[in-house]
Image (cartoon, rainbow, N blue to C red):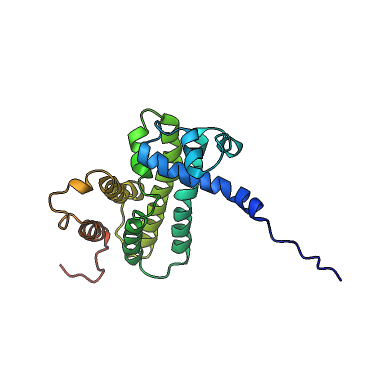
Length: 219
């Protein structure tokens, strides 16, 4: 009997399926290195090795392409963190320590630099800034708020204004990212200003500020 199993996709069809991802990757690199305003879709097409008109088959315009870059580059990391928190059995302090270290590991990826790009372009492209605020910044705050509530409910953290504290503990990590992509090469003492020391100080300040008092502590 003839084999009725489906044939594997041809190289050409596989290439066609990969094109949106290739365009997004090229756009990400150019947005970060050149800025949003200076990057044109023809530049993206050329870097991706596709025809000039092909990006328009997948993305309405440059703004739509930028949104796709954010959704593919950043949002999966949020999903991974949220899924991990759902199943995490250790202390909330342990989770925050791992989260801070994981954040710095992400800063070594090609996706790093998008936050600096948005801040630099926010005034000129307010719609993109609002999109980034809704999709990335506010989701990050909600994630930190979940960690804080978890710690408070388990008696690990003292009661705090969760919404405001989420802003406070997220901000230094954002600042670390901006520093990494702006002034870091000009530090007079790079060893003393390393990200490792920064994160140690950050965790010391945050965790000691959040940690609940032992119930059996005597005056």
